[in-house]
Image 1: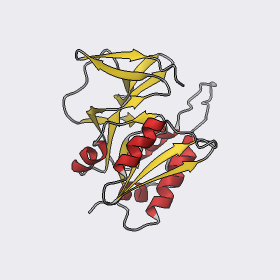
Image 2 (image 1 turned 180 degrees about the horizontal axis):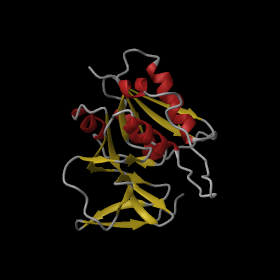
Image 3 (image 1 turned 90 degrees about the horizontal axis):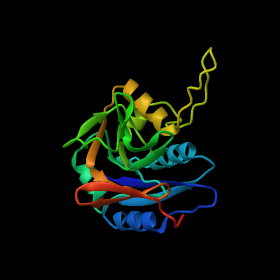
Image 4 (image 1 turned 135 degrees about the vertical axis):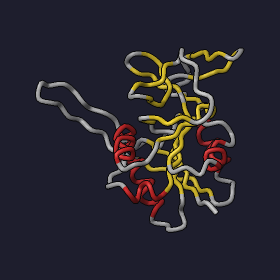
Length: 210
């Protein structure tokens, strides 16, 4: 039987969207599921600490990351578990410099909002940090820390910095693991944008409550 730790990275103020808390609390009522959080100065540090502490329990089989402002649909954890994959993720909207995109990359490009989502599972080249389920053997195959922001410049001064989720994605793929996405698991992301389904089309509206 799977034993899953739901991990939520939070800031030093321990703030969390009440809707995220409700989702995680509900999932944690299922047998073999626990919910934990880590309060640090960076999401990467929180994600790594949650996974490290989770894996100290040899019965833990998976870590499911849910950010403090992301709300997966009810039943997401069981759906992702049913695939029995090393890494599998839902999706949510990201606010990026060039607009709002979906939270996974294919051929190193974030999936555009105006492009139809794939039918069924798809292999990604990167996944964003929330709503992803990872088996313990993935973490055991990678070096600590599993998540960290990278800040570097090449010889001509080009900024090649990237976040902790990209760092995890890059290293997991280099170790031979596939990043699988279920585009039918659409999460809300209230820190930047709320996602509503209306008439089969997605409409973005900024959440004024944050």
